[in-house]
Image (cartoon, rainbow over all chains, first blue to last red; front, side, top):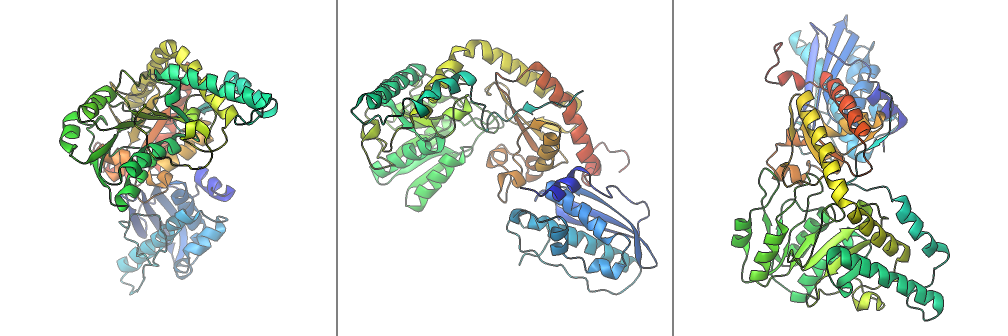
Length: 146
Length: 393
């Protein structure tokens, strides 16, 4: 059962689309598992001025992508890196246990996009995979499972 | 087009037919006697069950004493398969890769207890090979259990021929007919069936009630022990209202089958053709020829099934999918994978199951809504740009 907030973000996802000439793009997940998220960042003076996403996946995958973009829009890049999957889950008023994986993918997508921005600009970074304690995916998503 | 409610998940369950429900009601509040009691209201219940048993026996062309009432399809499958296995003690079971979990998990549990099993492949249409079945038979094969019609893709197996092969080798043949009963004409004698499972809620009857037909002389060991109900073959006070509802629903639906089958098949084909024509990158899962009249199963590439189901629901359409997210497991539907679909394509499957209550307006509505919903999901899908004919790639 999805919360009303998950259903709201699924049926009216925020920030769907692409950004031309984005400053950072990150893609995580795998079609074999059934979910792929791609996140685009526009960054100005270390502030995320715009963010867009495209997601192939279930209701929770769309809702967590949408919520993650909301949570990092207007924030500094450093703050965006602090986004956790737990924060996404809380902001959505919870997720069914089998969908926790989707929130981890959303966190991963943000981190991958920031890493791309850092790498393009020659900024050293040690962005790590957050790891996932989910029990609901096939393991091909590229996310480290704890 | 105005939003409407379209229930297109009749393989999951059906609405109880009002005339069936009406026949059930008195057995809750008036004729509530225990059929095992000797006073009159108990005897009334026993007589009602007797008539229901006769009605069902007539529908299946068997003897009333070959009918055992159960709690539904899963119990019937368990009772038949485990019952034969426990009777024989050891041996080999032949089944298929596309069985319902009530069969698959039962056979797998028996494997853990030392039984052996062969899971027959299916072809692209979802049908087993009779040659492969013959080749799989061993000296110690104790049971063949092959479903009559598949719950996901609606493929109908060559039941009569399977039964013939089983008879030649003197192996009991069980079929899970949960999706077939009420939708196809079944004749257990002519089709060489030794055991058959059915469930009332798939054809306008109530949930929680089903039937196991067991041919005389087969005698699987009892699954549920206790009192002597069902001639000592299945303990537990009878679900009288459920039994009445099962008998009424089955005889009612079969009485209209000659009129309903062509009508529902025509709606099914219009739905399939409309989807395949109007939505690119879709494919029909399972063949057309040996297919249940009400089953449509389509893979919609580049999108995921659960989000498709949720968006259809927001538009009033109830459907289902075989994606991993909807199967609640790590993998998409085992049936779609057995057909040879990749995980990616199986994740985007959509099952629409219609029946005699479906109208042409319902079909129009689905055909109107579905392309829009698919477009919307594809527009936000990062894999959609990978499609072969994308000019902006």
